[in-house]
Image 1 (cartoon, rainbow, N blue to C red):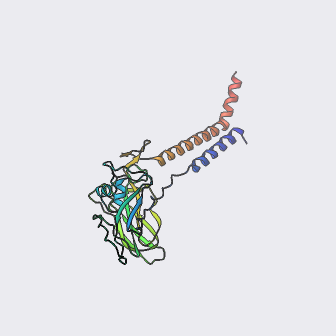
Image 2: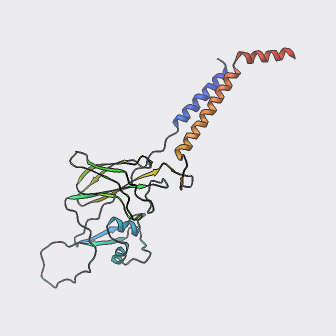
Image 3: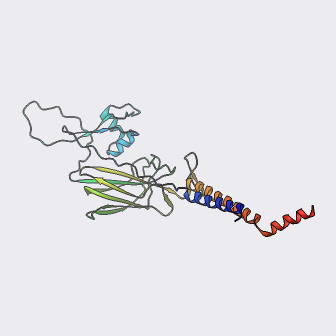
Length: 281
């Protein structure tokens, strides 16, 4: 076998294998769920500040306003939070036998989240992931026209709702399923036809009685892609996967060119032409 032709064929095969090996980008996992803290023995509901928390997020997750959160915890005007800081969310009254002694001074009225008894609440948000980073930003709105389904793994509970667009773009605009029994659930989301998912559209969730869980799912308009800086750009075609496809196409074209060159150099006419040139000399 012609060594040059063999080398070209081997190179073409290696390039084809490399192009097929290039991995596609995997969809990220939905964001972590959040559970409402359980009231302590004194009825105080305390939340521990987590990395990335803001007053807006903590207030939204506990159905209170930022102003109420600042007043309860004597926070500054900028509402600065420190990781590990304990925040008072509210106080609930606990039934018990009265004891002898002076009556305690009544505490000032504070907002008290409704305690759950025996059931849970699951809230799901389908948001427009404009920059494609799989994290919901405060300015990224909810997507209407989708559907959310919540199903208990043994079929004991099943419910679905359509996603809607709400007026306040900075509020949690998800849809909530109330009075859901505790257990193991599968959450699935259907997105409108003019969107591409930026996260997995199904999620396994375990909830206990008294929990309030939040799960986000992201999708990006087909008219918007993410450039190298991570910003959304409209009326473009392609993203990370497009660059991977382009690289694979270039590798395939290079391999095809090498194969064509080997085929041309191995034709009998080319050899005869070379011999004829030698005779003319």
